[in-house]
Amino acid sequence: MNKLIAGTGLALVLAASAAASAFAAGAMIQPDQMRANKIIGSSVYDRQNQDVASVKDLILDKNGKVDTVVLNYGSTAGIGGKYIAVEFGNLKFDNNRLTIDQTKAQLAAMPAYQLEDKATGSGEGAVPPTGGHATSPATTPGH
Image (cartoon, rainbow, N blue to C red; front, side, top):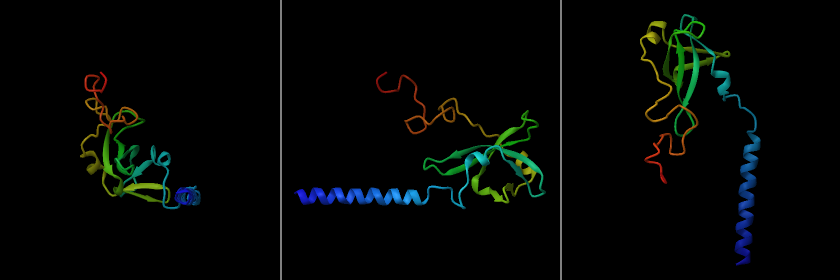
């Protein structure tokens, strides 16, 4: 019994050590990775090399992967315009520049994107522990 406990303990220590070593090896940003705060606020250029939008936000899926990029389109000095959503894969990252293979007219025709949903609470703050759906006090356990 003592050998089983000692063997299990050793296996756990070795597994934890291997996991820590794997993390330590990747403890710096890799060449194929990007920082979100360097993307948010960046200008986005179209095929004609015109500044057509800026990145407002990144929307993550439930697995933590970037799913949607919200662009601020049509505003001047932060006034007017609308938010539009494009798939992350539609943006090209070349020479520290973001480009999109769509024209101004195509972007203008896209529907507005709502960053917040008052009905569900989505987008208003940190993700609620209920998996992204706000609950009313009447449906919250204990109320």
